[in-house]
Length: 170
Image (cartoon, rainbow, N blue to C red; front, side):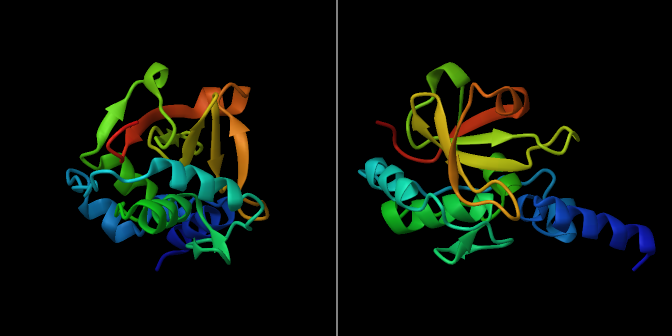
């Protein structure tokens, strides 16, 4: 592997957004592919949101999908799978490319996935769970813990990209 590729990979890992891009191979090979998301009728989005609140304070862990630690997409995969029996794509990019309905910012409902561009390269690189009242729960980056933030915060407002609804709706 060339030094420049290794340097880029190291920066991505240290920057805390590698899981959002899965692997270089899958990112390259899935540019036009979308993932079908299985939505379970009657899934309780309230239990997803309640559990997300309980997980506040859990450490960020690169590639994490358990109560020992989560990365941003791993948190949503864990919540939807364990609380609502909804299987989501593993990565932020996979979630973004899924067939789930895209939601306008003004139409957000609790349980929607909110996506952000934190890397300045035009694609999504972070995801969180909208919990209502203009707030979302997410696992931000290495050295931090699962927390609640406001979409009206200038940083998140600027980097907000779109939202997807992986649940039947409220």
